[in-house]
Image (cartoon, rainbow, N blue to C red; front, side, top):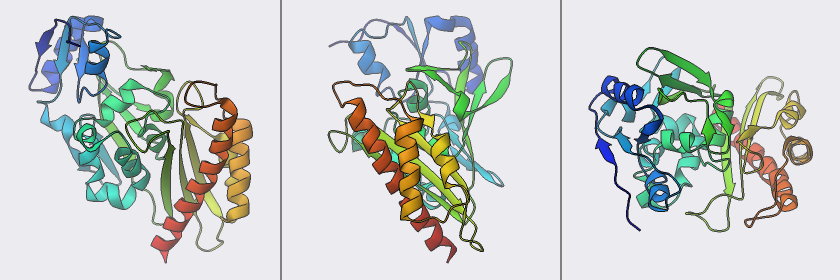
Amino acid sequence: MLLPTFEFHEPLSLEDALELKRDLGENARLLAGGTDLLVHMKKKLITTDNLISLTKIKDLSLINREENAIVIGACATMATISSTPIIQEKFKALKAGCDNLGSHLIRNRATIGGNACNASPAGDTLCALLVYEATALLASSDTKREIPIANFFTGPGKSCIAPDEILTGFRLSIPSDNSDAHYIQLGKRKSSEINVVNVASFLEYDPGTGKVTTCRIALGSVAATPIRAPRAEAAMLGQTPEEASFFAAGEKARREDCRPIDDFRGTAAYRQAMVGVLTKRTLAAAYDRASSVSL
């Protein structure tokens, strides 16, 4: 399959890219890694007269440390994110999401901004972004704005990005020493396959009381967008982090927090069952990591 004819634009600065996006509007698509976009264009699932490549804008590929947060550029690749020390130390669920996306070749091209803008309910980094409560950074030629990741996704393949805007990156607050997170994806194959279910959990506890003070759980592939599991999260608060409480939270997640559908990858009943299993496992792993760090 051949790509259709289009005009290729390669701006060297964000300002130039924003000007092009403003002028071309919905008649242009942004290109970062291209691991999804170019395939869809070959299949004629997406058509456009213009491609605006962001790959020459160096600032969009950087991962910068702020005082109490990090900012990940939208064009940072999965391989780069996974190999960054601060990600390996403080954002293990995000590293796991990056490591589970596709093959080595794909991870060297695929970007976190592309994964988010693709807005698949099964996206590998999206559950992690939700449990770390990331903030999406958006820019247009006139304004900049910040959107909580929970409000970023509006439907399958849809986000809140305006036609004249570009996603420039994500800001993630650095978690405390008494917290950690874990991510598990379940697919028909180990990689290069859309997930059947994916779950991330973040857990923080008080070393003095041993009780859970913060819990965030995100579910993928079980709704129109990646979602939080508020009832399961509430069930964990104030509880002792142990097998019984993890199991109870998993039951809440599968029974009350998700409404999956049947498709050729799996039935709704199977997905619900796996939500319970993966919620329990990710909570247990997050606590094991958090408690080992705080010792």
